[in-house]
Length: 333
Image (cartoon, rainbow, N blue to C red; front, side, top):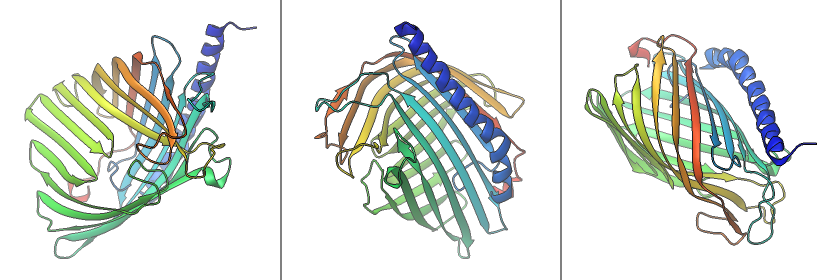
């Protein structure tokens, strides 16, 4: 009934419909939840982010994601946060690993996270964050497809510009290792032009050497994101990005219970971003993806379950960020 190109377009449209349904739920329901309960590490106001990308060369791969997060003050010393995320990744049909295992056409992720932080006397604080969800070709089809993560942290030696953090992280689907408690320590520093977090397993840098020039870098395990930008804040901004992305999924029909499907790629993009009316930010970027690889194993370098090298190529990506409330006074953020 349909030719190959028409079938691909039909799948693309169906994916768009599924994402629009999810986005509708997030727009009308999640802001209410966020305002009622308050997210650690999230913005001080309810924030909705949407993103969609599609290959221009082969039309084999398309990605869509939606994320909601917020953080609210429960008292002068306590804060609570909430986050929800959903995404879909279409890989295309008929791909097989070197072991003969057929790859799923689609991969999905749905996750909810929550956190709590409390200030203590003597310039110290403690908190925890946790998440639960599913990253799989058949999300929530069975309990063993679900994923979880938890982190507890203690901040000390806090000043107006810096602090130290000791943490303990564990997850059953992490780039750092599954079911293994990972201790961490980091140092945070901030001034008018520079914000930095240095430690293990996370590094983040945001530097503005000039008022209209920005440089960003973040690394968590094997995932690396970098950006150079030029333009006025809350105005038109041009940027160039280079990313090394890494995602793990728990397949429904995996051979070993602890097997994970890993998808990784490198990409560079150029684009522009603009903010309208102080609450809506949109960006369009075009770039090239390369070194796309999918493999099954039980660790970062374990590929005993087979591998598949996917085609790279040009792609286009559209992003939106919508603020769903007014910022809190600076003293409460």
